[in-house]
Length: 293
View 1 (tube, helix red, strand yellow):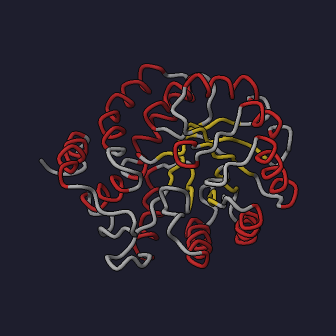
View 2 (cartoon, rainbow, N blue to C red):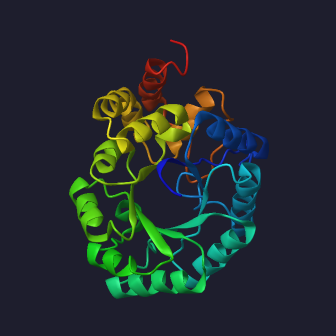
């Protein structure tokens, strides 16, 4: 069910920080029209850290209802509290999400056994497909390959998004867990090599701005068409870089504002993209024909 270009969808906001429901609806429809293979609602890029619990649930429900089973919806339901993550994951199942994306518990730095017990509890208590999310640069916590391998034997856990930027680690995951668990790149810049060596897709920031191109690159890579996938990835490389000049989702929200997809809203402590980074993002957008020169 889960493969290819899965957009880590932004949560559009008005200038006062309120969720922009009209723009969110338009973005969902646009992604489906453009060939995006799946949507993550309320992940890191969706500003999960600053949405309150009611908003979190509302956005997940809204996206599920707007998609209407046309493509899979994966709800971000991770937390550093197992109890809180259970509540969010149950809600995702209840409203019809196709899967849950579970970030490693952040800040409190559990042991590997603690991580195993956390994810095992979620897998056993909530019967919905679950994708682990390893992003130690944000969480201060690494899900070890051996821990992932242990978790891969639980039928509810179907994949892992690895956002370490380490191709060698991705290869280890494919080798250790490939028959039981799908591996997804969490870094757009190295999605192509991970796809070519056995990964099933990318949970993508870049797809927010160029969904058709990201979908085409993934489809070519999964079909084994190295020449086409590499040519498409080469075209996207400047945008991959530009969208991480500051902390995600600052650059991608500004890019979508520049292309007219939504307003400039973003929540503190995040702020709009710094003036000195805007020319590089504009240049990447211009090169792809997304805005005029």
